[in-house]
Each structure stands twice: as C-alpha cells, then as structure tokens.
Image (cartoon, rainbow, N blue to C red):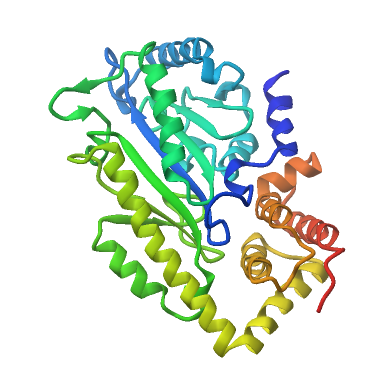
Length: 357
C-alpha cells in the first residue's frame, strides 16, 4: 500500500484519544505521554545537514522494523506526503504543528491502532508519544516506557549520567517526558470559573494549551494540560503528580456541572438543544462554530439529555469536521466556503436520527 492509500485508510479508523472510553471519559478525552530523544553522533536537529537527516530516518526505520511492538506500524517518509496529508495527521494529533509545518527531511511512525506515533526529526530526533482514552496516564506511560526501552537497545540515545537524556530544549532535559491530558471543561467555562483554575495551575508549573497542542489556543472548551519541567523528577513522579492535579480539576468540573443542573437547568437545556438544532439544520458552518456547538452537544450527551447519540459517534464529528478530514472525505481540495458547506452537510447527515426534545 502506497503512502496516499495508507493515509486514506486512517479515515476508517478511530483515534485512540477519541474512543470515548477509559476512566473519567465524560470530562477527559485523552491522556498522552511523550518522550524526547536524540541520537549520539549527530548534532541537534536545527544544525543537521540534509544527509544526516536522511541517515537518522534510515536508522529509525531499521530500529522500528526490528522492534516487535512496532513491527506492523505505518512508516511515512514526508517526501511522499502532501501538505494536506500533514494537516490530516495533525488533526488526528499524530504529529505536532512544528512537524506539520517545517520543511526538510522528516518521517513518522504510526501503529495501526493509532495508540503510538513517533515523529522523526521534530525539535528532537525522536518525539515518541502514546495515547490512551480517558484519564489513563499510568497505562500510557507503561506502554511508552516499554517501547522506549526496546528502541534504546537498537538506537544510541544521547544520555548524560548527571543530567539524564539530552534534548534540544533545556526544559526537556532529564527524563525528556511530557505528560498531558485533554479535558472538556465546559462547566467551568459556563460558570466563569475557568480563569481561576488556570491561574492556580500556572503556579504549579503546568502548561495550558488548546485542542491541537503547542501553539494553539483553547477552543470548544477543550484544554490540554501538561508538565513544563522534566529535570529533577523521575518519570513516575511526573505522571502521578499530573494525575493528582487532573483529578482535582475533574472534581471542580463536576461541581460546576452539578451547579448548572441545579440552578440553571432551563437555560442549560436551552443552550444544548439550540446547539443540536443548529448542527442539524445549518447549511454553512465554520470549523470553529462547529467545535463550539459540538462541545455543548457533548455536554448534553454526558448529562443524559441526548440518549440516542453515542459518545463515540459524537467524538468522531470533532475529527471529521476539521478542514483536512473534510477534504479527505470529499476526495478533493476545497476552499473555505466549500468546506463550510460540506461540514454542514456532514453534520446534518450524521445527526439526522437525533430527535429534538
């Protein structure tokens, strides 16, 4: 199967982070563990010559082929991908903004279930990440650690006995680990408590990002939280510390949702059903508007207002209404106006069986 056919085949699969399963999945979309690694004998990525970049890609490809946990993975050389393909992979959270946008030699490894992806030549030589649905950081770390250990037997990772793993950015030196969770905090936003929570988290050295990670703003009431420092802590401490904080945020979100149900139920139901009605009837809709309306619809599903809409089917709409996915589904390049029309058509079709209360 060539690169284009392989990319297109992903349209028929569901990303791990959108499965709608796992602990606390009504609030936590996903948990992710990312490891930054570099190979000895090479400069950091920014100073690599083109020939060195290609050598690293070849080394990683051989290592992946010889690693049992990764043997059935897809391997994409970016020379074989269009810009649309990169945006498609970005929307699936398999690559970062930087990996999608920057030119030069790059590659990507993706397991068939999309639980693990390895960006080759992002800021570091390797950025490996494992996803789990819901609040499941410990399992994501277990899996990522297993794969990292296997790769380290085949690749010479740059490691200093005093500092730990050496990375291009000083904040990643040490474990090279970034743990993160994507949370749907619509209750805290609607009760205007979100800024208080974000201010408290900034004092705990946690980074807050948007739906597509680094470099993006929060949209659709989705927030991604992650540790900022890795030096001086071991991996288990980082993971357990973030999970404790996430559980506190989850409790605050549950309290906010309960308040809305008890004190503002009529207005809440009105907002949710207006959102569903718009999604079911709109003829033109932008991706940002769709994300906001789908956020309210998801709250309605979580609260039991919309029993006939499964979370898995709803979560898929967060993905398929994104620009690159719409174009892949349409098998054609679409301008903004055409995407707005196709997005509205898709939403009407997928939600036609949802009856308005």
